[in-house]
Image (cartoon, rainbow, N blue to C red; front, side, top):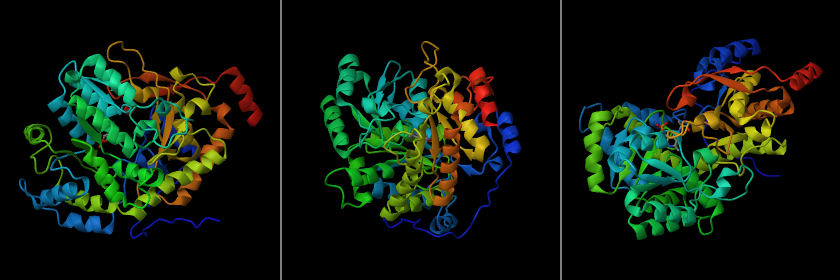
Length: 471
Ligand code: F0G
């Protein structure tokens, strides 16, 4: 018998949630164009759309918010925020932004010129969109295992050094403003990067005089995996591991809406003074004064406090274990998910879940809609729709991974909620033949997954027979 690990906090304030009827959910998903992003949250029972900005703040964070200094310039909240970033992440300078993509916008604008190439360990939607907006091209240099949902590798987020070397040889170091390394890798399934890989990537880039930038959005989860899986780190506090990870980078973009346990905020941090100066010049134009960057003083105070709570070893251990608790139930039932189970989410492998639905009929989107109808659980497509179209050819990009993400907000749901989710997914898996594909009826020009609309395709004859059999 293993001793259970419970939530390392107790509940002081609750937010009621309501279970709807199946008929209500069928109507709601049709009104939402079969896109879970377009559902109203009051129609959702358990919201696993994202772990972004959905965190529950602690009593100490709420108290810190009352200390917010709302001065337009030079607010003390900024200096507390800056001190926390310096202390925990170790970068010399920080510019706040309203969220992660605000920081991505700044760094892309500062460093990318048309024709540049930006290698990275798998794309992220907003990151790549900002790179492309500046005329850059993203090139994927993640290890092959990351694209295979069944491959067992402790650090599936690792950079493939041979691929990176090949890109440098092909385009020349002068055309690579920086390499963007995400820790963990969201779209690979929340997979971590090893410390050794960071060290080796750093050494290679240093040789070529190329900057190494970090997407630190879920870096604490990555630090926890290093502690669990990499030799030499077992006894170390997550805080020290995070600090070492960051020491290999020239700077980072950050969505504080994840690791930092807040509902809004982000930052760009760096050591280089000239990048700081450019960032300060641009942030005034796009976000706000360099001492608030689109945030209220109280938001910066909540982040400063959250930064210390996120590196609590008990907190992060429970966080990752809760994700695993859900994932393991699905694995035990034979449901195809991305393995190993990642840090922030369980990803259903829609290709293997719905082998009868062609990728052009959006199996992950169809599965996310079906899950909502079954139990009011909201999830997110991370497949062909999120991947978008190639800007050159206009063709759909067809990623190998066609996934539904069940993303666990931090400190929000109990393990019992995870049981409800697991039950519903298993129920759908047993009845998977009844789920048919979708066709897209509205497609926006960028980041289409947020607002695209769909209609269900008529069920195939074979499926209808099955359906009759099930009734
Ligand atoms: N980088 C990663 C790895 C992310 O997961 C996100 C956001 C961003 C950057 C952008 O940050 O939303 O604060 O502007 N991911 C959210 C998600 C949206 O649901 O995965 P943002």
